Every structure is written in C-alpha cells, then in structure tokens.
Image (cartoon, rainbow, N blue to C red):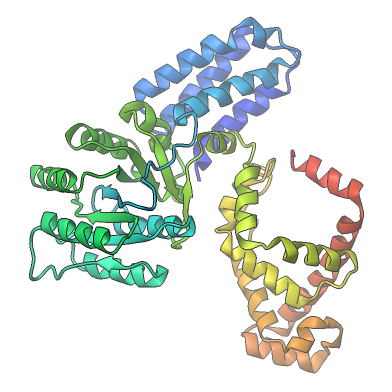
Amino acid sequence: MLEKISDKFNDVVRQVSGKNKISEKNVQDAVEEIKLALLEADVNLRVVRRFVNRTLEDAKGEQVLKAVNPGQQFVKVVNDRLVELLGDTRQELELKGPDTTSVILMMGLQGSGKTTTAAKLAKLLQKEGRNPLLIAGDLVRPAAVEQLKILGDQIQVPVYAEDPREVSDPVQVVKNGLKLAKKQLYDTAIIDTTGRLHLDEIMMQQISDIYRAADPDEALYVADAMTGQHAVTIAKEFHEKVGIDGVILTKFDSDTRGGAALSLRTVTGKPIKFIGVGERIEDLDPFYPERIASRILGMGDVVSLVEKAQEGVDQQDAERMQKKMASAAFTLEDYLEQLQKMNTMGPLSSLIDMIPGAKGNVNEDDIDTEEIKREQAIIQSMTRSERNNHRILGPSRRKRIAKGSGTAVYDVNRLVKKFEKMRLMMKKVAKNKKYQSDMLKQMGM
C-alpha cells in the first residue's frame, strides 16, 4: 500500500536524515522533492501547497537548522505535517450505549465495496461486543440484497431484507428495518444503500430521504482508494448535499499512490475512520494517522503489527512456543500452526510495511506465497507422528508425502532441511538475549 509515495519519501529521508549539518538550500531541495512526490500521488493541489508551505516554514526554523541532529529533526517535521494532513488522531465512531439503537448509514458510488464494507463493519463491531443488524436498503443493484444476506450468514449477523421484486421504496425498507432493530433490541443498525456509477439527482434525493428517515449517528461515505482525486471530489459532494461524518477507504492495500488518503481530511473536513486492507471479512482496520504517516516514511508500524499478532496468538500459546524453541522441541506440527496463524494476520505485503527498516530492504517480489502454501500442503500430508518427529521421514515416507501433497520429493527434502536450520536458529535466538537485541536494532526498533 502507498508504495509509490512511500518510495519517494524514503529517498528524501535517506538523503537528509544522515546529515550532521543542513542548510536552507538542503531543506528547499528536499521539500521540492516531497512536493513532486505528492503531485505524482494525485494529492489535491490545494493540499500540496498547504503542506509544502507549512513544512518549509517549520523546517527553516532555528530548531531544525541548528539542532544537534538536524537531519532527524527535519524528518520529524515532515512526519508531524503528514500526521496533520491525515487527520491528527484516530477518530472513533460516535455511537450510543447498548440500551438504545445506534444507526450507521453507508453511502457511496457503485463499485466502491459498500455492501462488503457494511458486513466488515458489522463483524468489527460484533468483536467489540456490540449486537448489530444489517439492513438491505439497496433495491437497485442486482443481487445486492442476496449478497448482504450471504455475508450476514458468514459472520452470523442478522440481515433485515425485503424482496426487491415486491417493494421499490428503500426509505420504507429502512424504516421497517429500524423498527425491527429497536423492537428486538439490536444496539447497532447498519444500513446499506444504493450506489450509482456516477452522481445523479435521483440518487442524491434518495440518499437524502433515507438520511432524514434514519437520522443516523454516523453517516459514512465509502470510497475506493484507487480512484484518487475522484473519490475526494465525490466525498465533498456527498458532504455538501447530504452530510457525512467520516470516510471508509476501501482497497487501501492496493492503493500505491495515496492521493485520496492524503487529501480527504483537508478537502472534506471529515476524518477517515476505517480502511479496507484485504478481501477477507476481517480486513477492515481503524485508521490511525500517525501509524500511516510512519509507514509512508518507511518507519514501519510496530503497534499495528503487535495488535494483529495479539489477535491471532494466545499469551499462553506464545510462552509454550518460546519454551519449545529454546529446547529445540519445535516440531513440524508447531510450524504448521504458526503458518496458519500468520495467515490470519493478513497479506504478507502489508505486514512487511509494518516492520521498521523492512520497507525498501525487503523486496515483496522475493516473498513466495506459493512456497508457503506448498509447505502447508506437504506438512498436512504427513501423519501426526511424522509431524512431531521429522527424523522418521525416510525415503518411502517422503515419496508418499510428495504424492499426497501434489509436490515432488525434492520439495519435501527442501522443507525438511529448511526446518532443521530454522530450529537451530530459533534455539539460538530464544536463549541469547544479546542476539535478540541485535536483531531488533537491525529492524530499527
């Protein structure tokens, strides 16, 4: 995500951060590079001008030019201005307590991922202890109601829907759905609405009518991050004609430029509240401006990485695994378990962005996700005794495993050799505190 702008910013940071002394010309040149990077990222021109002027003003001050480490001080200035551009701090949903029904209205153009995002948000709120109901208010797009029902079944969240062949007024459907939500004590109602391929008066009137009928606590505009300034322009129109409280950016994991993310807050005055970071139903993350700014500057995002790890790893399991590593008792069964847990954390490419120092030093093209799948298939073709004791894997067993996993004996041999080396390295790391410290320093932590 944000690869292009991150690469440009990284180049600027590398040029400046190592300098013990910088001049106003150094600052001017660096800011000019940043300006070009922002324009190439399709950031709104007014936003670029404001960012450049404020960065220059701060960076030419005495506290930067005469600082003990002026290069690092300049990077801090750029980071602070990026955070400001992205929205300063995390903006939570403003919902009522559990004794009454909070209403969330989802708006946006067709193709932005509105229906899927409604289900993702329901799943996220469910994990936080809320009791959501999805309301199918899109009666125009073919199969929209059915899609929401299927997603609701997947996450075990009920969906209020009426047959679009029998009803044509989405406002009445929404009213009926809200009545049901209040009657059955759902504390959150999430309304999916009709999108269009472009803005038109009929759509805006319909959304306005639904808005008045629903009186939402949160009106969220769902935007496709990959559409850049188009998403920003449409968000501004939605806010002017209907009113929005925040934005959810979908396809953020595929957004290499970042123009929408860096422009939305300044242009609309409304915060980005969530970002879609993958296709799975769990892939909706809260938006933290300071964490995204850190990723853009190649500094990683340790907090998000730890949070993702904590979601998939139990503390007792982690301690048990550490003891196994220290005593070289780590097995192929344990390795399979770790691979499966890693899958729950999301795409590897997004995890790399979170590791300090990895950006620019780890080539995502070198990560063979097919190899990881192949390794899982090989281990899953083994018996439990073989997974727990790889030393019994003789030629005949390896041949059987290769056949069962659809791979070659060569692949099985390679996995076993890799695993044996990995066990030795794990034992060394688990026992040697200095080695752990050195590794963390290399990661920039």
